[in-house]
Length: 135
Image (cartoon, rainbow, N blue to C red; front, side, top):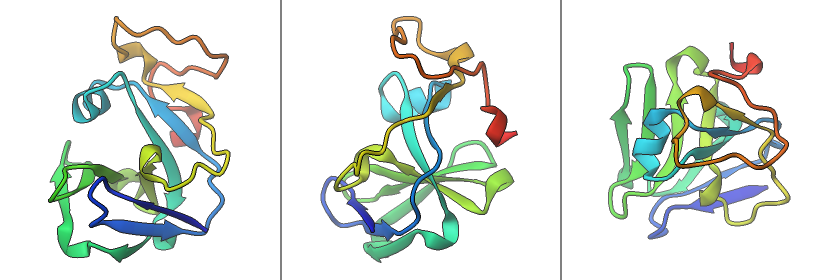
């Protein structure tokens, strides 16, 4: 069982599925939303992600018409994202998990638009835009 929560602990969630896809996204949207060089997301089946507290604290922001980010209304922590082209999945922000359970990112995506001030030094595969699994 995987559990997680926002910074103020108002929004709490769980999922049971073993993550098989963990991405580091360098797109300009993720950089802007997180205020950092990238966002890190755990892909889980949407039907397997369960809010156990704070549904009334969850705010949905329509980023692109297809991509929505869900965050806590109180503390502002991004909790997960949804994408209408991949509606069967939710993309949980890795940093919100209570324990990482040895979850490790598998690749970098959107490196074609990564921040110029950030250099990638790990051996993970890099994709200019979407990973082949997301196309």
